[in-house]
Image (cartoon, rainbow, N blue to C red; front, side, top):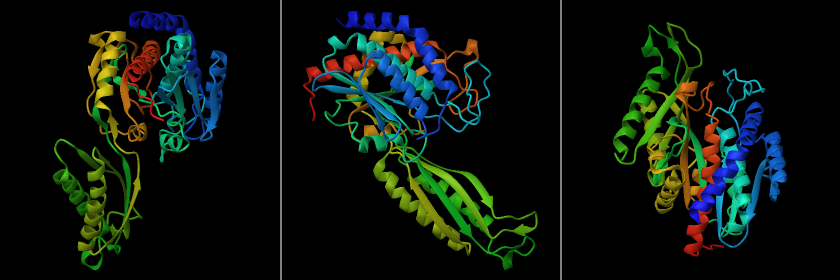
Length: 405
C-alpha cells in the first residue's frame, strides 16, 4: 500500500508540475511583507477553491487554514507566506514586481509546495487514515511572529495535531535531497538595543569627558567573553553586536552617546533567560566603570526550535522511502531562527530542509540574498515530500491511537 500511495503522489504531481511552477512564479512576482499578505492569501484561497478543499480564511487577517480528510487523528503541515524587504537582483521573467520586496527566503517555494501537496492529498483523500490540516501562516519574518498569533487563534486545536511538519529551502543542499535533525535544531533569537550615555568633549582631552566609545568597546568585549564562558559547549550561544552608531563626532570629538544593536541566540530556554539578566548586569556595570550610564532594552523573540526525536526519525525514514536513502541526509545544527519554533513548544514538530541548489544553473545564492532562487525541480520534491510525510504521519498516529483533543 505504501508503494502504491507513493506512486499515486508522484504521478499526480508530475502531471501538475508546470502548474505548481506557475503558482510559485506568480507568488514570487507579487511578494508582500509580513502581515500584509492580502493578495497572497487571496491567491491561496483561489487555488483551494479550484481543488475543492474547504478552508477558513482571515485568521490573523491573512492566514488560511484548510483540512483534507476526516477523523479524530490529525497531522498538520505548515507554510509561511510573507516576503522580505529586499530589492531583487535577479533578471528572470518572474522577478519581483514590487520594488524593495522579494521572496528571498523561499516562502514562495514553501507556499506553492504546500498547495502542490494539497492537490496530491486531495487525490488520496479516501485513503487518509485521518485528517491533514494545512496552515498557510503570515508574518514569519517579523516579531512577534505569525506562528505565535496563529496558535493563539486556535490552529492547533479541535483536534490537537499529533505532529506538525514544516519544510524550509536549503540553498546549500543539492536539489532532490533533503535533511533532518532531531532535538534542538535552531536557536532562539532576541534583539538587543543598548544606549551608552557619556559626556562629550575634545579628543585631545579625554580626562574632561566620559567617553562612551571606550565604554562601548569595553561592553562589547565583556559581553562576548561572558557568553563564551557561560555557554555550555554542547549548547552553544551567540551574542553579536551588528550595529554601532554615535550621536555625531569627528576625528577629534568624543561624542556624548553611542547606540548599539545586536542579537542573542541560544539553544536552551532556561539558560536564555539567565543570560538575559547576566548580560544586562554586565552592560550596566561595565559602562558605569567608565563613568557612563547604559540603557538596556531586550526584545524577546522566537524560542529555540526543538524537533521531536522520534517523529524526526520516523519522518527521515519515510523520506528515504519516497526519495531514496542516498538523498536523505542529517542536518547540521543552526544558530539561525524560525518562528516554526513556537509550534514545537506546543506539540511534536518536525522541521526539515529541502534542497534547492543547482550549480549548473547558477542557483547557488543563500537565503536573504538579492539573487536567491530555487531550482523548479525542488517544487516537485517539496510537494511530494509534504504529501507523503503527512500520509505516513497519519499512519503512525493512527497506529498509536494519538487522538489528543
